[in-house]
Structure formats: structure tokens, C-alpha cells
Image (cartoon, rainbow, N blue to C red):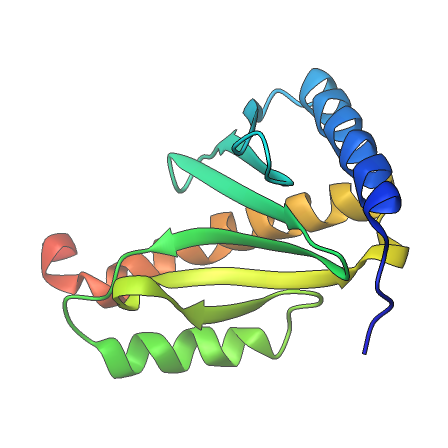
Length: 153
């Protein structure tokens, strides 16, 4: 089990993450917004403009043991569900620190988590970049599998 961090450490890390994310936004034109969750939450939303998918939003949630991160990739497939699920499960094999999963309403998500002791600016940049790059790389393929009739010639 990962180490449990006290409230003071979590609050400090919360401030650092906010600072790091704003700095990332300043130097990266792809990031169009960085927002916070409710006042009591240790949660951030990083919205990025894409080329393959119009926008990708990464949610970061700070807990007492881990930083959880996820992004919504696409809705539940209208067709070829088995082929789509097999495709993303096979993609999991090559991912580091993230995995595809089926979430609410059978939508496809990309998720992961990181022990708090490993959270720093470089790792935060890697996490956000990995989720963004993975969505950009896979989205054109999986949207055509799950919604094939919309792409028929």
C-alpha cells in the first residue's frame, strides 16, 4: 500500500500542482484552460485543443495516497463494440502509467494514478502529455471502429 500523506503535505502539494499547471499553460499553446474543482476539492481540469479530437480534458484528483488522472476518450460505441474493446485492451500493453477502461454509460476513458511521493512538475507534465498524445494517436482509429456507419463512403 502506498504511503498516507497528512493534510499539510496534501495542501502543499495542492499549491504546487496549481502553480505547475499554470506554468505549463503559459508555455504550451495547446492548453486552453486550467480550472479547479469545488473549493473543498483537490481537483483540476486541464483542457487542451487537439488536431484529431477537438478537445481533450484531463482531470487530476489529489488524494491522500495518490494523484489520479483521467480523460474521456469517446462515448460507448454504436457498433463493433467487441472489436473496439479488443483494440483498446491491446493498446494497454504499450502504455506506461495509464490504461484504457470502460466508464460511466460504457464510455471509453484513459486513466492512471501516481503515488504522491512521485508527484513533481516533470511527472505532472509527463502524465498530461501522455494522456493527450495517446488520445490524439488513437482517437481517429477507434472512432471509426465504434461509429463505422458515420464514416462509410
